[in-house]
Image (cartoon, rainbow, N blue to C red; front, top):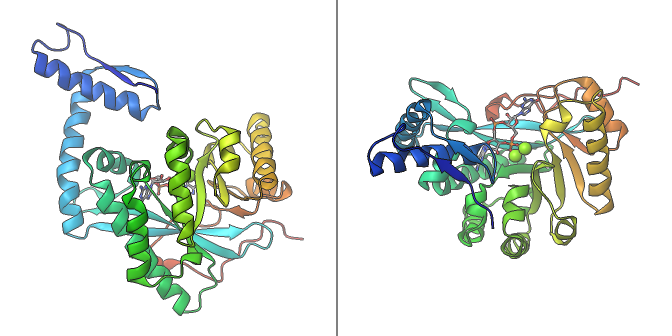
Length: 310
Ligand code: C2E
Ligand code: MG
Ligand code: MG
């Protein structure tokens, strides 16, 4: 097991035990958001952050009730022929004053307050309905990818929730891809293995998101019933010039291929990155160069920006 630590000092940070604990909790939140197994010291700005979090947590409840959440869709292209083959559903919060709030600002808070289960269930329902609509309209999509919070991944209810959404929306599970992060899977590999096998029984596909950012045991990876690895955008950013990124990307592609998985790169912003990935036989690409996340009605099915002109 591992630990994250938040530290608040007496008497410089606070005089009462209550306030010290609150401060330590803010520092703990900071330590956790900076990655696992770290520590952070309390600072005064953290109180401002904590206030902001409390505000957001309160407002999120309203956001759900007042239908302020939106699902955006980002295109995923086949790198070989540039065809649009799938989309990833990404949640947004259309806040009445703050405007469009990205998930990085509220998902971690939702995870902490427990609202994440409702948010993810809602996104899944919306995205599956949208996919049914697109398929009925003849869109040439082969999958819709949906993110699952690591908090839910550890729970058995996830299976029932997914089964229920598939039943309610009528989406053929073969079109559904669930994305779980590497750390969610590796935190408790035995539970993960069981959970992934059950989900697979529903007939859907599984992908590991942000691959390369956590610590994977290759032995465990080999046993997982997963069909795709998504290379984290942090490695794509340095392509093709950064030698370390290039080396890592080559290895991840080789690893995925040798285990019979598809490989999909995120965060492609430049054509040179797409070309490098194509040369290394990466299957799919996603990123601003192909298209940003957008509302469902703005997706253009015919767009196929060529990675190679010849
Ligand atoms: P992710 O699943 O790895 O999604 C990819 C993120 O990269 C998205 O950020 C996307 O907008 C961004 N992105 C795509 N192409 C590019 C590019 O070319 N350059 C750069 N710099 N960024 C690019 P977004 O939408 O802000 O989402 C952030 C994260 O929030 C997601 O990372 C995912 O982990 C989480 N998330 C999003 N929607 C949901 C959801 O419905 N449920 C849960 N549990 N998590 C979600
Ligand atoms: Mg994702
Ligand atoms: Mg990712």
